Image 1: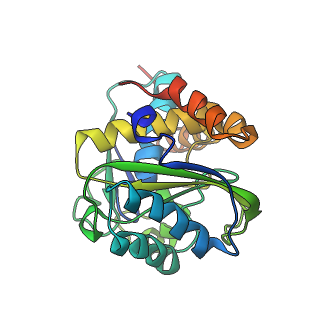
Image 2: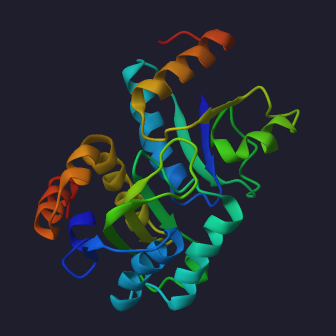
Length: 99
Length: 148
């Protein structure tokens, strides 16, 4: 599964998000996850199964048919428990079970 | 990494600022004085917030200010100021802010490693950081999360 953490520049918040996301997937027992980071305007910001984004990017994603059902917007980028809940809910939605 | 980058010259406590702009500029001047980034970089940090909003307040009471490497970074750097009186940045959930990190980011593995340590510090040491009153206490806490 390819996960892309996106913030404005791809250098600050997205790297913090990546750490949290990484821990979440480990604790959820899901392997085979690649997590990368990107700035929102970078061409890299399109190729993933799941996007983890900061709240200021919600409208950009909602208006993109290719990505509007594939993102999780995060309020607290370092809150592991909340992020695990959101990731689990997303995975339940697309029905992937852990290995 | 962070225990080297954050030292007595790049950390300041009891900082007084009238508003968030002034506070971010004080953070930036610590980076400037240490030769990590230019005055233009400090201004770019302020402009980023004006343009993109207060999402630099990444956790309750904690902000991470930065711009892009090409805005004027000389070398990877990190500064920290603890405000005497918390200031609002306009964030819907995480105001008011008491701790501001200034980040001179580079496109490098060093930067990625620095951010990983910073994430650990903020995930596990945020409360201690907010309770620390002196530079010494802050630096001792940072040392716990840094790996040379």
